[in-house]
Image (cartoon, rainbow, N blue to C red; front, side):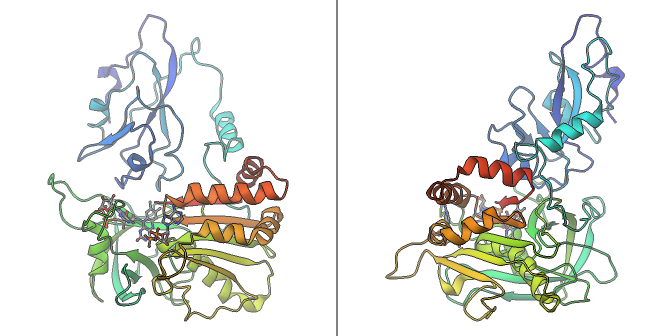
Length: 417
Ligand code: FAD
Ligand code: A2P
C-alpha cells in the first residue's frame, strides 16, 4: 500500500484547496482497456501493471464510469489540488492510498451517504446507471485476475453461413463444479493466453452472455457467448484480433480462463407486464438472445408484456440467432430486420426500421413498463438517437426530455463497443 507519510500528500501548513481526484483501483481493475477506449479526453493510460488517470486531463465527465465492468474506475481520493497523485506514482500502486483525514476547515460537509444519494439522483446525467426496479440481483466480480474461473468448451459452432462475410461463433462454456451465476445482459471476461508485442500479458476482453440465467441448456452449469472473429479493424484494414480468434479456434474440451460476471444495470425487468424493446447490430444480438430465451422459457406463465426486436445485419445469412430459420411466433416477438448489404437492395440500418415502425416505437416509449436495450456497434448509437428524435418530433414529443425521463426511470440501457 502506498505510504502516505512518504508520499507527496503530507498535510501542509499552507491553505489547501481540496478536490476529488479520479483514480482507478488497481486491486479490482481487470485491465480490459474499456475505460481507455471510452474516455473522450484521452485522460486514461496504462503500462503493463496499471491503468491510471491523468489528473490534469480528466474533466470528470463520467463517460468511463458505467462501461467499466468492475467498478474499479469509480474511485476517488480527496487531494490538495496543487498536489494530485501523478501518473508515475499511480503506475506503481498495488492498492489505492488510504483516504487522508478530511480537514474540517477545508472540506465541505458532504457526508458519503449524501454524495451517494446525489449520484443516484443524477443517474442518466452521467451518474451510475441503475437496473430496472424488478431486475434480479446480479453477482459481479466473483472471479478476478488473481483468481479466474476455469471453464471447458462444450460447444463451438459457426452461426453465420459458410461464405458469409463475417464469421460469428456460438461458444458454450461449461463451468463444471464452479458456480458462475449470470443474468441476461451481463458479460464476462476472457483472458487470452500469451503476451502482446511489448511482452506483457494480453488484456482481458469482455463478452456478453447469450444464454438465460438457468443455463444454455436449462439446469446445466453452462453459459453461451456470441463471438465475431475479428479479421478486419473498424477501418476495414486486415488484422487478427487476439481474443476473438483465440476463442473461435478453441475445440471442445479446451480450457479457458474466465473473469466476472460483470454488469449491474443492463439487466432485464422481471415484473409481469414488463415489455422489452431490443435494438442491436451484429454480436449485439447476444444479450437480446439471452433475454428473448428467458421470456420464451416462461411463455406458459402468460406474464404478459411485449418483446420488440430491431436487428441490423449485413444480410440474412449473417444474422446470429434471429435468422429465417428461427421461427419465433409473431405474438411473442415483433421482429424487425434491417439488412445493409443485400445485392440489389438499398442499404438499411436499424435506425431506418425504427423510423418505419414509428407508431409501435412511440407506444413502447410511452409505456412506463417498457425497457429499452441497445447493443452492438458504437457507431449506431448516434443514428439510433437521431431516429428516436425524429420519431418523437413527429409525435409532438421532445426526445431529449423523453430520454432524460427514460434514464431517470432506468428504462434506457446502452452497451456498445
Ligand atoms: P483486438 O486484438 O483487441 O483488436 C484488433 C483490432 O481490431 C484493433 O484495431 C481493434 O480496434 C479492432 N477491433 C476490435 N473489435 C473489433 C470489432 N468488433 N470489429 C472490428 N474491429 C475490431 N465482442 C463479440 O464478438 N461478442 C460480444 O458479445 C461482445 N460483447 C462485448 C461486451 C462489452 C461490454 C464490450 C466492452 C465488448 C464486447 N465485445 C464483444 C468486444 C470484445 O470485447 C473484443 O473487443 C473483440 O472480440 C475484439 O477483441 P480481439 O482481441 O479479437 O481484437
Ligand atoms: P454496414 O454494411 O454498413 O457495415 P457488422 O456485421 O460489421 O458487425 O455490422 C452489423 C450491421 O451494423 C451491419 O449491417 C452494418 O452495416 C451495420 N452498421 C454499420 N454502421 C452502422 C451505424 N452507424 N448505424 C447502424 N448500423 C450500422
